[in-house]
Length: 162
Ligand SMILES: [Zn+2]
Image (cartoon, rainbow, N blue to C red; front, side, top):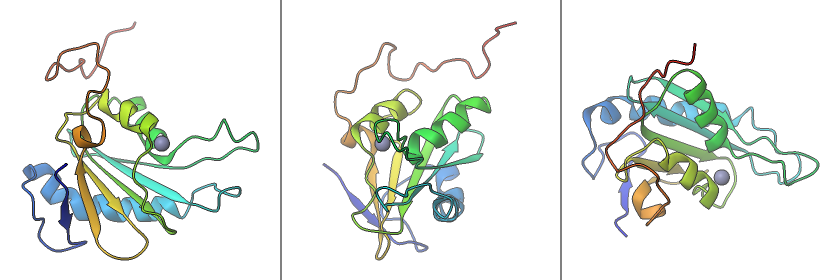
């Protein structure tokens, strides 16, 4: 696995595409800001996620826990739902922040959900409560993920349903 360490504000040590480069700081800030609205009364583990789409838009989500536990949804999939609902069909990066350890590396379900709309090299930035951000490639977090379509073939940004 290739894992690059990136500075929170400083230069990234791995090559990313220009869109991600210019939006990275805003993405990190959005994830941290969203985290403050997490609903995590049971775990006490608040998470905020911020997704960047191919238009440069940023969508956020938080974990939303539930008394039944099993209905809890992760911040990454809440952000994904917001992005898709706004018409996003291709994602370029995600940042995930938590105020408490451990570092909020996405769970398996979220990795598969993100892979529906992302290339294997999409940066996944994990922002721990203290210390430096870590960068992973989605494909390293989800090797051999399930796909029905060929890599590089993307759904239309706007399907016609009317
Ligand atoms: Zn998850």
